Image 1 (cartoon, one colour):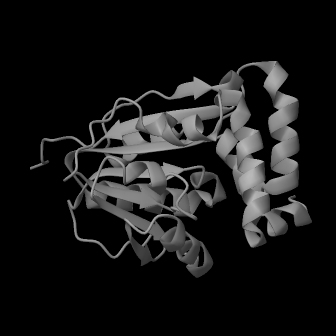
Image 2 (cartoon, one colour; image 1 turned 90 degrees about the vertical axis):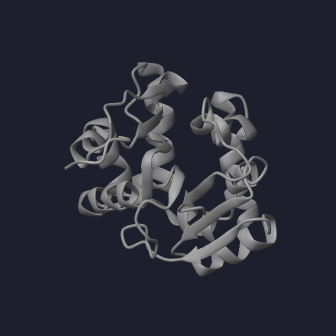
Length: 213
């Protein structure tokens, strides 16, 4: 069960930013953390990019440096207000990730950063289906989120972090095989790349360019 620190971190941007910077030290700092899921992707100025659950625009800030067609989606009006101030180059939509108001086959890249652990299992599958729907054939869904540590040294740190700042859904994600779920939805088979002793995972899942008959 999360403490009052969770509520404070969402209420006060300076606290959230401080926690993010501290947590990102294990991968070399926040700038590197925000770009881990984007490594190896080809993003041009005309690439259609969706920053899903964009929050205050922490990763949107990096996406707009490569593309002039970045859309941030979030269910929180307060977060979107902050994102518009922080990254005015992007456009923003207030909506739930499991009910996106976009046409089929619209985006080349859909990205989400440490957001899936906030979702209940039923929501998670709906979101993956929605991402698959809005991606163009050959498009990529790229994400970074928690993972059960493979190095025992990292268990105390992630356990304390989840106890202080997260809810039961984050613990559930540690037991969830995201790559398998993505394959079940229809994405090509993908394998997580692990960081920070296995406590973080990056997955880049491709939507097949072959349209099913």
